[in-house]
Length: 516
Image (cartoon, rainbow, N blue to C red):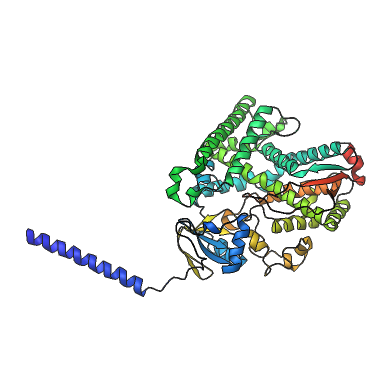
């Protein structure tokens, strides 16, 4: 028995020795993997010390020095930085499925429903179900058209307020606040049929409370959390970031659940359904749509999923559209010739009446202005991060599994290899061959599977608002100096200085405005 045990023991030792030799020989004779270039790094920190604010500019400096495909390390997290259109196409087209995941960051855990909200969910059956819901039930052409009255009503309410405050002469308005209130009212009108700014606010305390919650959630998205890159610091919760996120998530979810329950009670009381409710003149909201679907498919449309969809809509559809409008108006005030050309197009195509969404296809120059604004000032200069689910090859370089992908859209949009005079504001560039839709040349909404599903709604909202303001009023800068185009600090690239402008009612629209 003893001899048998010795044989087994030495057999195992021999197998382990053979396995060891095989592993060593595999490493020695394996073809070395070509990794992307990498700047010098520090122990523990990696390349975190190289990140200066605004981050997209500091990353562009690195790319200009070391190349458009860079290997970085943020603490213990490997990062692939992409700053060229061709390499972005490698990631989001050729390797789209491999890079379809999102990294697990604290914000996504605590404020995106434990990585289950559509923007932060991992690629798989749950994400595909959410994508199906948003594509068909929220952002389809039919659904977007269904809520056109909400958008038109809010834009006209803004115009009415501006006209009333102008006293028929020159006035100064701070547009950042106006645009933020407009987009928030539009989204809440579509989601729940409520206004939280301006007139006809039913519950002032409810409105104040929810405005504060959304403002805090958006601010949290831009906060730094070292635990995301150095897990050994996570348990310390430096600055109390996680504690504040947990408290905020609880407050937000209590509010959203109450909002859903309010709609559920109203539906039960009024026997509300798609046909009957609309026949009685009731406003059917996105919450009503989701609750109707919940009745037929309860597992696919739980209250948890409905809350996550509402939170995602507010996060992605309010601040981003408002900032795009503010950047666009800033550019127009600095380029009065472009503003005059846009106004001439509106006067010719629309005439002495208020702009409607059905007019937008007839206004190509207005769309050129929006595209050029999104090119120069994409509100998500670094697209939402992706993460590789397996090893891949990008631009001839090996990218390991579990690498966080950052795509610098700001750098791609200003690449002199793609754009003539890349830092100049020239909407006309989209009229000729330079503006042709090449893959991943203009990517303000991302690309591929994880592209923003609400891009169509955002462009329509921005077009309606900008077009109406240009059409109804004459606009000038405050003072002789150009509008300051310095970028502020934040995830969605705000202006450092909120935009103020001088305006007066357009003479050709006076009769229309006076009847609002």
